[in-house]
Image 1: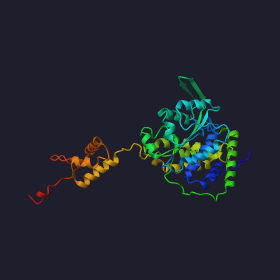
Image 2: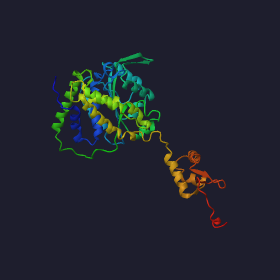
Image 3: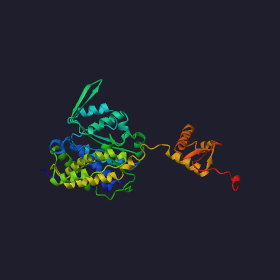
Image 4: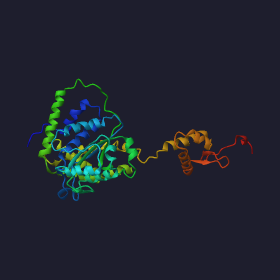
Length: 393
C-alpha cells in the first residue's frame, strides 16, 4: 500500500487554507469534502444487497455556501478548484448551462462524472429552471443511468452518472427564488446548506506566513488526491460497533416541526454515510467505516444544522408583513385614523391598492374595525369615547 503524503487529507487541506483565509471554518471543511468527493466519484459505495437493503450510497455530495456578500464563499471554493484543476480526469462544468448541455457533458465524459462549481446558484439554475433542479435531484440519488431526448441529437445515454455540486448564493436569493413548495424536499433536502453571516477574522496582509511550507502542503494534497483517484475502489463495510451505533442513532433520530427542515432530516442518514465515507478516505485506503467516522460525521452535520433554519427564514414570508405591522402600530398609536390619513402616511410602503388589501386583511383578522359613523379605522374592541359625554348619566 502506498504511504499517504498527508496523515489526514482534510486536516492538511484546512492547514493549507486556514492561515491565509478569512473564511468561516465550515466553508473550508466542506470545500475539502467536496474536493475529495469530486476525486473519488462513484469508485466506492455502500452496497444495498449486503448492507442497506434497497438502496446504495455513493459519496457524491451537493454543498451550498449561503451568506451575505463578502463572506468569502467563492474565494474558498477557489481552493478546491485549484486542486481539482491539477488532478487528471476531473470533468468540470461551466458556471452556466442548460440542463440539456449538462446532460451531454456528462454523457460525453469517459466515466459519466462531472464536478460543478458555481459562484452563484442563480446563474447556474436559471437557464433551465425547474428542469435543471429535477435533473440534479435524480443524479444525487445515485441513479444508475439516464437518457435525454433532444431534437438535434436524438437520445443521449449515460451509465452510472456521478455529479458533485458546490455553489454559493445569498439568503436573499433563496428567499426570492425558492417557493415554500421547493423548500423541505427536492433539491434543498439533498444539499448541505452551510450558512454563515460573518468572517472568521479580518486580515489584509499575510507576509509573515511560511509560503514554502504552504507549497509543500499543496504538493502533498495533490499527491494524495491522485493516489485516491487511481488506487481506491470497491464496497465500503462497517465495523460491528459502527453498525450497532448507526442503527441506534438512526432509530432515535427526531424530525423537527419546521417543515422546511423535514426533508433534510429525512435524508440525514444519507448525508451521514456520504460524509463518513469521505472522512475515512481522508486518512485510509481501507474501505471500512468506523464508529469514530460516524461520530465525527454527526458532529459536522450538527454544526451545520444549528444555522440551517437561517437559510430558509424568509421563504414563504409575506413580503408585506412589516407593512401590516406598521399599519397596525400606527392605528394603535393614533387610536382612530381616517382612510385618507392612513394611505397618505404609508403611500411609500406599498401601492394604494395593496395598502387597502392589507387594511382589509387586518379587518378580517379582527385586529381593527371600521367606525360605523365616520368610516375611520379603529382598534378592534377599543371603544371611542366622546369626551363631551364623560361624567353624564
